[in-house]
Length: 210
Image (tube, rainbow, N blue to C red; front, side, top):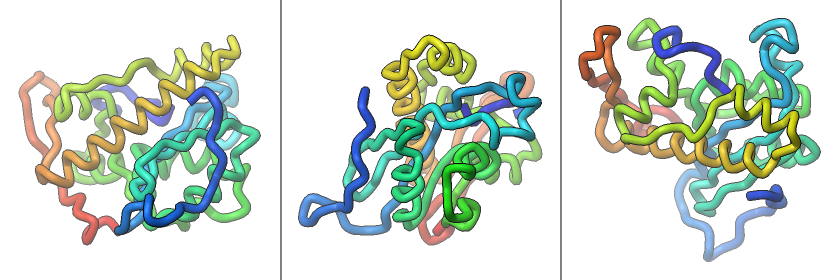
């Protein structure tokens, strides 16, 4: 739900928080790829500037140490915050501008102080305009989001939490894969306004982003 812009304006049950156990956990920095979905849309709270009023529907992280997803409903929001606080790095797409604002009312810490890399901010800084996660995923990974934020809001009103969780997991998967692609290749792909394929050089090495 973190994308409120157009192309160029731009587990059924939550798993409990638990400390990793050795030797099953991998070594290296704990990178958490993060995304969330909300209960309410921008029109219901008076605009995108009031994203802190949208309320958490579900949040999902992929933990690089444990190589698994963790999903959290609103009642588990404190567990989500605790999981994020464990990270050496949180990676997301519009996570600083949106996801953290939604989650902050549930947190006793300042989420902006977490070590975070926001791919959207990096892309925007270089290009001067925003590209959607879906656009970058299509051009770089040949992958697409399975739904959109408006559909997720409808599912919430219909009580279809399983579908929201599945959708959010897919978004986290795409977020992770896009970051790893950029890290490995040193660029991501996109289309210009006149549909010409272009590449954007990126430096998403851990030495740079942590």
